[in-house]
Image (cartoon, rainbow, N blue to C red):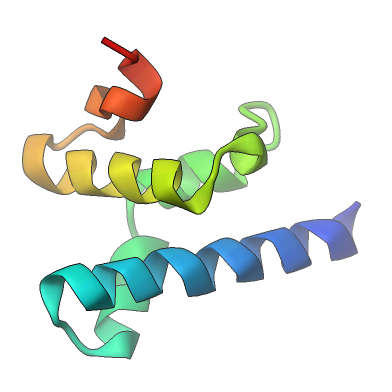
Length: 81
């Protein structure tokens, strides 16, 4: 499972940081750093939450909600309202 997690996290790191770059026009390393040091990322790596079932778009939405509101749980992707 450890090797699978490395692959899964690498996939999300690439996809989500690319979305951050495209939407906000920031440098690639800055985008990756912003994602890796977010609460959203801490939730993603928490095996109990099993968030690897979420699409990269959902994870990006959570990250963006965190940037705007301070809490990734405010994402419409999670709340579905």
